[in-house]
Length: 284
Length: 178
Image (spheres, each protein chain N blue to C red):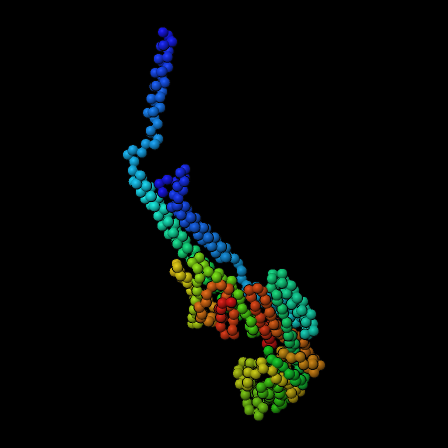
C-alpha cells in the first residue's frame, strides 16, 4: 500500500485497498443518493392534494342543489307536474355528467319523481267530499268554525290509521270521536278552533289518535262533508286525479328520489334513494 | 610552452567537472536511514485509520438517514390512509338519506419504504369514534402512529403495504390489500 504509482517492473497488484475503499464509498454515496431521492419523493407525495371522496361529494351536492332549485322554481310557478320537471332533471343529469367527465369521473343519475296534492278550502260552509290515496301526509290542518256547523252534526276525517268524527255538541263546543263514538278530545271556546290532524292535537291539546302511519300511505279525505265549516289545507304525496278533489287543489312536486353513481380510477360510489323534498311550506 | 600550459588547464577542468558529477549521483537512490517495513506499516496504518473513519462515519450517516426517511415515509403513508378513511366516512355519512350501495376508495401506498417492507395495523374505538393507524418497519425498527376520526365504525385489521382498498360493507369500513 505504500506505493500507489504503478511500478515499471511489472509488479501491478498494489493499491487494492484504495480501490476497495473507493468502491465502498461509491456504494455509500449511491445509498445516500437513493435516500435523498426517497425523501424528496415522500415530500412530493405528502403535498399532493388528491381527494377522491371530495369529487363524489361535489357531484352529489351539485346534483342535489340543482334539483332543489328546480323543484322550488317549478313549485313557485304553481301546478307543477312530473312531466314538467322531467326534461329539466335530464338536463341536470347531463350537465353534471359532462362536467365531471372532464375531471375524469364517470357519473350517472337516475330519478323518480313524486307528485303531491295541495288540497285546501277556505271559509267554507260545508266541505267538499274527497278521498285520495296518499303515500305520505306532510300536513293536514283544519280551522273549524263551530258556529257555522249544525248542532249535533258530525263530519268525518278519513285517515290512514283510523277515521275520526268531528262532532258539534254545543254552540261553541266540539268533540273529536273515534269510529265507535268514543271521545278522543274536546274543545269549548271561540271560533275558529285549530285541529291539527298530522300531530293529533285540538287547539294545542293532544287528541290521542294514532298518526304513526301517516308516512306509510293510505286513504285520506273528508266524508259527511256538508256538516263541516271553516277551512283546511292538506299536503299529501299522491298522484290522484285532481278532478276528483276540491276545486282549489293544486299539484306540486312532492319529492324527487335520486340514484347517483360515480366512478373514478380510485373511487366507486353509488347511493340510491337520495331524497330531495320540495320546500313547499307546511300548513299552519 | 604556452601550448603545454593550456593543455594542463583543460585536463584539470575536466577532472573537476567529473568529480562534481560523481558527488551528486547517489542522492536520488539513497535509502540509508529508511526502513521499508516501518514505512509500509506506517502507510498502511494511516490508510486504514482514514478508511475506517470514513466507513464508520458513512455507515452511521446512511443508517440515521435511513431511519429518518423511513419515519417520514411511514408518516406520509399513514396520513394518506387516514385521509382516505375519513373520506370514505364522509361518503357514507353524506346527507340526504338513501342507501350507500357501494363506496370504495383505492389508495396507492408504497410497497416498501427505505427500510424495506412494512405493516399497517388499524385499531378503532367505537366509544370515541377514533382510531389509530400504526405503521411498523424493521431494520431499522421504526413505528409511526397516525390517529384518525371516523363516525362510521372501522374494522380492525393488519395488512401489508401496496395498494389498499377502503370499502363500506353496509356496517363498517373495511381496509384490505388489493
